[in-house]
Image (cartoon, rainbow over all chains, first blue to last red; front, top):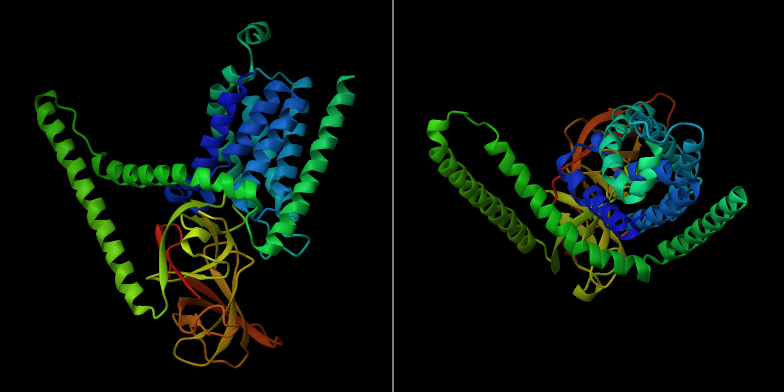
Length: 165
Length: 267
């Protein structure tokens, strides 16, 4: 694994999410690149790495938000852990598994965050579950195809990659 | 063995997250960025600023350069044309920036209090909260609860400060509440953020005269937001029978997706 390169990509994704997407994309059509990356890393390396990477990514997002009060660290840690369990049951080499997993976890993560983020108070607006399923989770799933290709060489060693195939 | 280590890591990180929740809640109560957060934002702010410039420049350039012809005989002309298009785009950008800064200056001179101009360098990474990061902090004289404006109207208030950057709570955020009134009358209410692109004005007297397209301004109550600051226009009035108050949907005057420069008003 190449942690330095992964960290750079993580920071790049955070910058894209905080300063580029809000300018060029309408509100409902902004993907969550960090979640996509956490799920992809967890699928390739398993729960332990997924958990640690999810935690790191969540802490970074918490700092970038200033409003989420550690909830993102908790939610992303959980996503990293749960997504890491998937490879033991299905093939991690499939092109579509990352997309499907990202779709499911993107939706799940947002629902959990919605209920945790308002500090136990009644959320000020209803859960936009239709918008979360489409376009939000669908966009993330589409991006997973690309993100998985980008981070795969950084996460899986060539030998390991060869054996898997 | 693998499962045991696995769960240990998970439990450890879970508690670390819980600890972070505690720290963040404590820090949020003091309205200060914690040192790590402040340092991270200070490092990230210039990068975000550069990305912002590139994004805005590129999106303008692409929209103008997209239509193309394929004939080889006019290759050189095409090259020159694209050069000119780039030049025009640059000039357009400069003209736009001039216009924006001029309107900000004119607006600034209209405000009686001293103001600090700032640039928006980042936004909240989540879809649920509405905050922006500006490139001025306590070292530039910014303190918490200063209000933030554009020539369009009220943007929000400063809610977290570090030496070089500050975070602004937008009026769209669910935690934002602004005492308000109709500009042409005395109908009072409170404008709350709803998380979407509109706000909602609550606690309007049931018999108050309020209609669509009415302009809503801050009422000055609570002394945080100065009286008369434009907030938005009424897009719909929600009236239910047997309820003491009615509500109104407010479309903010500020285009929050496009804000680049703001003015922070000193208290």
